[in-house]
Image (cartoon, rainbow, N blue to C red; front, side, top):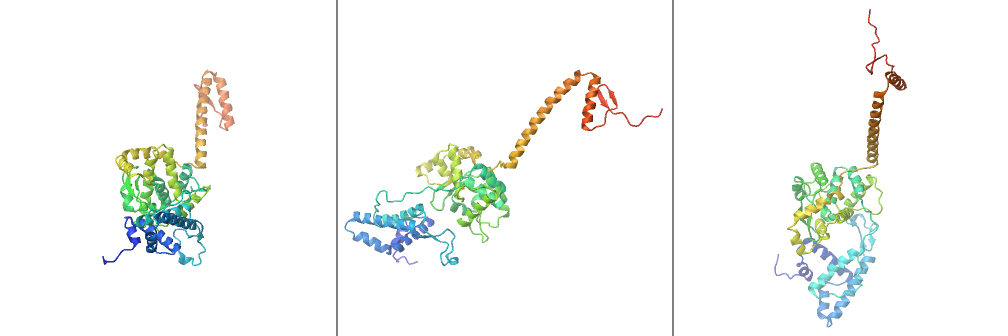
Length: 399
């Protein structure tokens, strides 16, 4: 490569970000903005250089970014991950407008370009759309996930158990490789390991539950891919669409009636909720599932991994997938309790009868026993001896 070739402003900006995934996302967001605004990166920087009032430029650029953000939310063409426009040239399966959180992330990445090559952009307070909390989603209970786990096959068990144990995002989960996870399938459960998230670079101190280890061992024996844990027929990672579809199918197969949308991210929310209910520190939970924590706290927690393991293991009962109980199991449990109660009652009655028989005259005792045997359809006794019933031989001895 010729070192004398001058780099573009965009390339100079992206050099500040070492992670390839971050650079790829930022350059795509910035390309969308340049296409919308109809200018190049050089023209944007020249506008800043030629502006006499830099403060006015910052406000006008901020207003421009807010217009772009509103366009993303209301008019931008969108499609699901894994969408192939070649199979849908007319765009029948696309829609307009993206989620507010996604639009905010795009604008934030573009603001970093101006911050790097120009100056800080000023956005009026309250102009930035507030992030929305996802609504209309199904909230899994532990009993529901145990039911799903019970009715799942080998691969589905591995997906469910691993997802609940790790609490990762879908992108990180799909990029999980056998080389990363296999060494921890031969150690005791709850052994922790470090992993860096591919999208944000956040560190995660993850653990595997007993059912996750068992399910992954079983899946390893029949998995066709030697690279990615969950791969398609081409031995490449699944798409998010395929993963969410699989999750919805295994939930439906288990007979669970969803109370909202069902997708993979709900497993992460379930683990976070259960860890929080167990009283674990919020920052500790963030580290366990791979969310950003401050560098100072991360340095401290790196020296306390045994404490993190103890907290995770103590909360395990809240998100364990073992101990499945369906309606049949519940009926059997009630039947067992009924049998135990009746057995105890019979023992009491037997004790009372034995006491009565001990004080009863021999003739009276004989009449009682004959009546009982007659009611049961048994042959009447022929001989009584020493209070015990002895049946005489039907054949008479020769004189």
